[in-house]
Image (cartoon, rainbow, N blue to C red; front, side, top):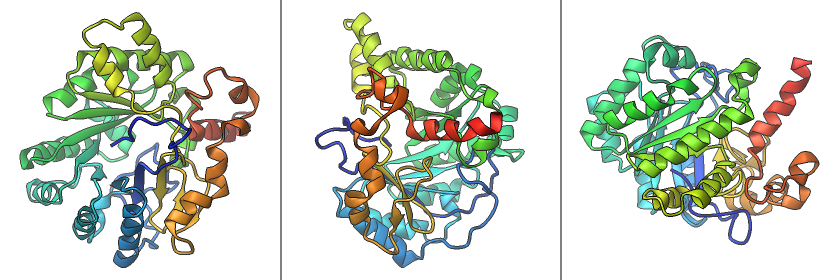
Length: 349
């Protein structure tokens, strides 16, 4: 569930990936959730017809990958109906779930809905760490059961993991677990301080040297080619992979690493957009800067004309150390991470 080979120039702001927060409701209470109150029902989610409108708009914008996200999207009664509508419109669809609600009958319905992939969140290789992260005892075992049911039903399962200081040491075991569960991919998300994550200890965020080590590990594992491995919200991966390739261009796994370099730079508002449960549009789910509402303006109009998005797409507006960085046209920074760190600074002081 990632955009194609793009940078931030030329055709770079063609919409590639649309995340729709189908509901704000959730059965977990994750400590890193981008929402401030993940266990609260906001009660203002789009109706079925309004949701169909989002899908119709996406189909007219170059047919991006359409991700049913949340909250927990399986709590929405009409998810299957809307998934069928998206498929009928020619969209490639994906489902992002925590997996805890999935039993064999529900797994069969998910598989029948035709999602290209179903991503399940799994933040550790053992129960205590995952359950602590997800805020509910038993979440790990429920997610594992959900993954097994989905695989049995024939769904292609991708495992998503948020990486921080508490679980970075479990990466090799998590990778092995993903393989044993029959996952087609493991996507690693660097922890972003937004929503509940703003209250997490600064010690949970990986230091730059640790990030570099994690990304180098990802490259080496990619070269092994066992399952797809991708670092998300890590635009510096492009540089790390390219530097590895200069040293290992003739290695057996070099082509697998090359094929895994799908994008460069932060894609928030460039190839990615996020539509909230209430119809508000954001550059991505981790960047709480509104671009407008689909209840007031057409999604395509927001994508093409939003001043927020225009500024995100212009490298020349970068200032300070980001503006001076020699890699700015390659990495461009994780914009939500930079914003979150900046907002946290007065709190630490």
